[in-house]
Image 1: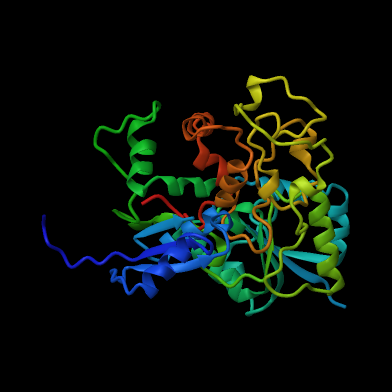
Image 2: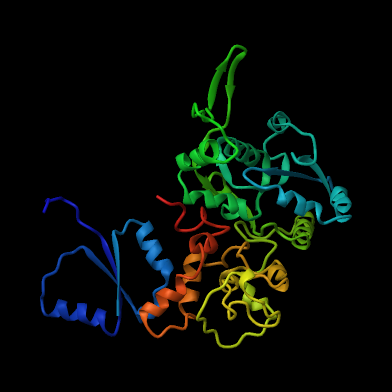
Length: 68
Length: 317
């Protein structure tokens, strides 16, 4: 694989009750993970509007993760 | 009180907005009573040089239609902005790019290739394309530069009011003219001549549970004139479109095409519509959902028909 300096910015929309809980647990368990994921907590992944995804991408995100 | 000085201009537009102004019929005489027209290329013989000779702020209200497609549109927009106290983005093209804005799905080179090479009535073996400057024995000729993408009016100048519609309806134009004439101007940046509710909110059709198994184009089915069009499987943009047109299309048994644009607070009408469709597709499996959604012909062109340059998508890469 070609080595590059590319560091993607990934916006994660995480459900408060599951995926965000998991991310929180990763934190308290002191699991290391790369800082590329920028997490936005939503109260339900059903709250995520396609506009959020478009907005994230148009403002420079390289990827969007919706988890919940 | 001296009469209002009114200007109107078309940039990348079809002329329908001008016709819409004339559609106020005999009331145009009343407009002439309260206003002097100082620039209106389709109807009155003023030149660009006349506008250049006006003092800054000489024009009270400028109704600007059309998107900004080339350098001429931008130049006149800036000139009229300088000469006008109030600048109104009039019609869907000026507000959000309108139909000309659909060109943003293509690149400039693709458009030139289609228009000057591929189109059936064209013979152009030397591949001659329009140039911004061309030397002839008499001197140098100039053409406006065709921009890489279509812009909205607010992308090039400061806009005071937005009046959506393709075109804005005659009743709404008349109402807005009266408001302007009365001097009771709304706050800057307001959308005028429309409501802040959605089309669905004003639509009188019977709405029940929305579950769609198959999408149709209007010619494919006999349309029930009482029932919600979306429930009949037509991609009616009513849920995500600003009301104000008087439900003209849906009253004529045609689905709303979304020309009044999104309501306040929504920045991307197409994305909102994707969200709306997602909630009505009646599928049990992801494959079935894919199959139902893929029946929609030209989704991008349908969901962004009047507002691609003003949306988050803006243009194809």
